[in-house]
Image (tube, one colour):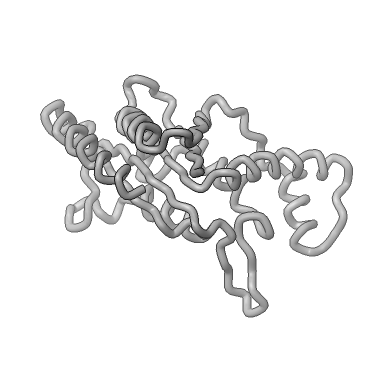
Length: 209
């Protein structure tokens, strides 16, 4: 039975467009998959560990075959707990607003924790990488104040979806579907129309997810 990890990367609660559409996705997916589990992870409430010197040193210890100190082992244990939670699911849903043309800092911190050698990706003898999270799928709901779709003047400023979908693919999650609420700061007519279109698209995404 599939299990869905719903990662919330917006702190805006009921005012968030990405959360509103992602909530609708999660509810529809739950209805379409009776018996499946949905785990919600609000990153702003998650108390993620700092990726500090102890964690970084533990990472390099693993890469170079060295033993951990007690402090490094404890720090790395928390990282492994978060990775184990992520790997325990085969479906992922992300609610991601655009912050400064990219993703919120808290989502980047989460990615820095879960993207680890030997756990979510590996390296071949020739120096190339391979993802270890195969046969998984992700759906992403993006929200953006402007319009950044291909062919628009602001297209090149979009470092939100290209980065997130690249790093998911790097870890092996290459099946990524997405929907975007664009123009959220361009007036209520544009915003409401974009949100309605996104809500409609959710039904199609859930059906094939």
